[in-house]
Image (cartoon, rainbow, N blue to C red):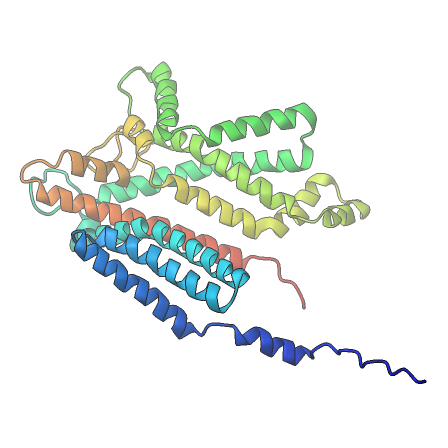
Length: 360
């Protein structure tokens, strides 16, 4: 008697499995409709409880996300619905984080663009009462102090990072790293008080100089440069160093000719971002530089005006009538935002232009 073996069940082809998986996928319009239904219910709840735009947005996000999750759970299953829920939560968190930033930029642009005229860049406040005037003296004061800060901080920061990566070992390396970490967390007002105390010991109380502000900002900028440069130098492959050593190149020449050129894009980006970090600092400059309505280009002689302090005093001590000074304060704040955004764009361009070219 012959026994026939039942045919083995063959697995579905990849195309069939893909079709089976795609059958339970919700179309985009269904997800949008589910979220819109949740938002509509949120509008009804908001009207019943007294309409408030903030409560409406919260209700809409919660109920819309819940509607999408329930629909996806019924149609697509547990894994896909959980994925959609987490995606919605992350997107919502990003949106919430963007709200204050967008609101701030919108408010500053809306109120600051009114005085963003040629007079604002060409005039100071010397002898001015009331309408008009500008921030010519504050703009140049900010540029001068920022350049001095960079001249002090960049060499110290880069040399410290090179020493930590290429030379330092053992306890000394750990000690320097610890102090850099501590300096990274120093409040900005403490840096200003340090610079002020240092110059008071030398020149006496009441001293205000532009160089004092540069030194105070250097205390804040140096650890940022060290940290960013250290991480970039660590990314340089050791094979490049070893190849140079194998050719008999001294270590210092290897650093100058191999390591630094390879990391130049990252170093330039880190330095630019460090400058953007300190260019808008106010507290150290309030203590060390002060304010003046006259134009002073000499950082070693008397007070200097800077954009952050200029905006602070125009807002807190506007005079009579106050609206003209407040308008100047908003324009100074807008100019600072443009300056910081410009430095970030420059950092991106440096990173892209000077990045090592790789062949494919």
